[in-house]
Length: 134
Figure (cartoon, rainbow, N blue to C red):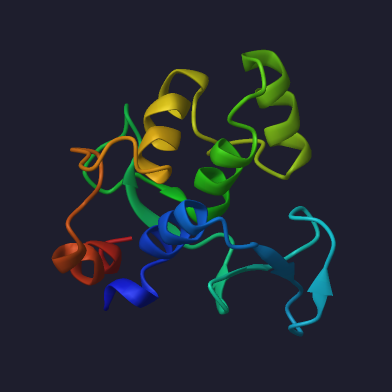
């Protein structure tokens, strides 16, 4: 898997370049909300919103990773107070699996490029092999 097809890298590049991220349905039609969508269009590439990223959950094990929509919602709601963030994360369809309030800043800082490296991100070279374990 090249970096251009890695959803986490694509999301970070899109955020850093301020490119618009849109949503589509299963048929590929534009969709107005993340909740009703099945995919995120990032840098013109479609990624299923429930794609597991290489970003490990803080309390999780070696194979417990956030989904793309969870990481995206953490960034989307980066300025929301904790309680509001949790409420809106549920409204975006993340009843479970959302980035915790305590981990959100770390995720957002990496996405925005304020932090270059993170020990919570599995190496790109192992991404395919690691995901086969799920």
